[in-house]
Length: 550
Image (cartoon, rainbow, N blue to C red; front, side, top):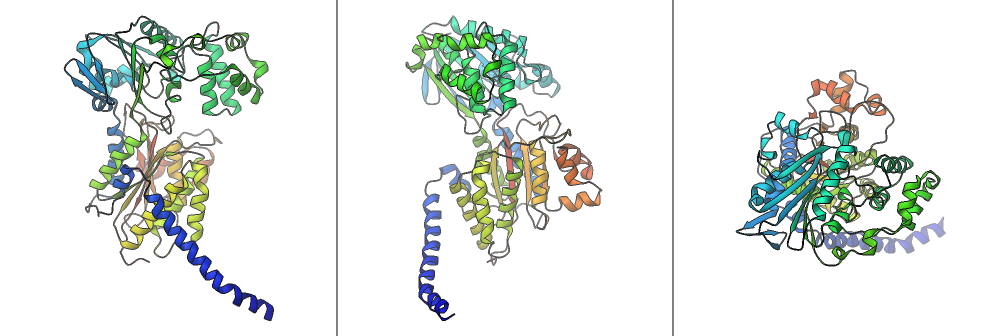
């Protein structure tokens, strides 16, 4: 006993020194990391107190989401990216001469609206255009009063609809062939404007002969079912297509190629958006064969696929477009842009906006847990337990959020909690995944909102407690009319009072039915046709706290 007391006496000073060093290191790291944040984030997390707003948390959340969607409308992003000056056009800092030498192609769900705006600005120099768009999109836009996203009657652009149910088909294949033909006829003095948005891969199928469209679809479906990553799937798609992986730019050479891209992929990787038709990417047959071998599918390959993979690609023999600097790729709309304008609207509505990250991914249960922990951390009336911050940092790699972004976010939330800065709006984006265990109706946004509602149990309800919104910017979450839902700490009790078993609906992946039945569907987010897609927007609203909280 005496020996233990003596040991404690000897180590006590060092324990104090270690604790002091640990706290000093924490403070240094927080300050160090804050110096390296991009300016848009810093500006949104400024210390100026937002103005007061008497609207409900629910109404303000919907208003912030609407601002995010409005910022990435197809016509808006094109209009802001093209600067016309007499007979020249400036795009992303590059100037191009116009002399009736402009041609246009496009493919994607939002491309019709992009093309309509591009023609309004550059139509007097447009020779010809072809766009591949979803089946029925023109009629749908007319029905929803979106005539401004339609081409004019005497347009120089040919519209080709296809890819019914978002799958490549004979119609989209025909459109791809016409796009290839247009690109192949261009000369050195021509400009090719390429418009790309989400869904572009299905609308630009171009299997290398003798591979049939059905064979290419079967191969990629088997890979996806076996658990192949999106990077592996795109590697295979590029190797079997004559337009993907820089193929379109190859056929357009020696013309100048300008691609305007509305990104629906986390991180905006140019080679993954629509499988990168204007981005050179070298694919080695050995790499493709190793992917099939990894998932034990090598013996199931059709002879046509093996034949194509064993012969040299035309782009491997000669591709001047790869090194000549003839291609400009410009991302004109993304989740980050949507979050920026959501933050501006949040400030107008009385919140202090704070962007967590634009690339949240991973299992929806882990993502829900993260938002629940951040809410508890921010709403704690006393010093938050250390295990909350520890679990938040542990979850980071699982949900695609860097540790420094989590540290920065918790630092700002803690300062707001202790100094009484007012209400805070934590914004994030991305695309979580849902494990399918049932046959119900719903989507990742509604399921995320439902799971966050469970994580918030025990906290106060709005206006004194947090709210959470998750919504898809395309306006459709799964096969439902809703884009997502809004939730808070009162959801579980509200469901119990209405005899709705939350766990049953979650097990059956039936979040849409749950929210439809709960209080007459008041929590559903139904913006209607949005005409765009830059993934999802997540929003955690933290109420103001008195400045004497410690």
